[in-house]
Length: 149
Image (tube, rainbow, N blue to C red):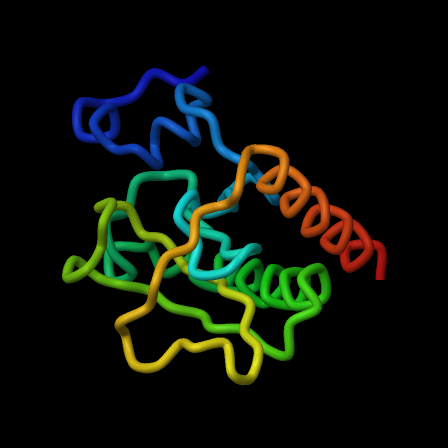
């Protein structure tokens, strides 16, 4: 377990990275971590974060940008395949509407007619922990297959 600085100790995502808070993790490498959003737009909605605390995209050191976005591409493919989606929405909030002040990329599976219009989207929590874990396992299996290519 990592020892967190004062700002990081108050950050929910830093606490997830440090193993202090639980999360349904779908992917991790030396620079980033991805887990299911607890209040997803749709099942399979993931958040990808840098392991180090960077509040916004402009705060991310340039040497980490390529690795982070390579993982965004990988996760978008995995989420679409795992969830049988027709596409995906990739989004980042910087400060405004950023519920946790730690850079995070939303990767959301999409289907035509799914009801998302504009930015007033209903959140649909998982029915239970089992559904969340099943969704996590689907994405992990898809990621494992993609990483074997």
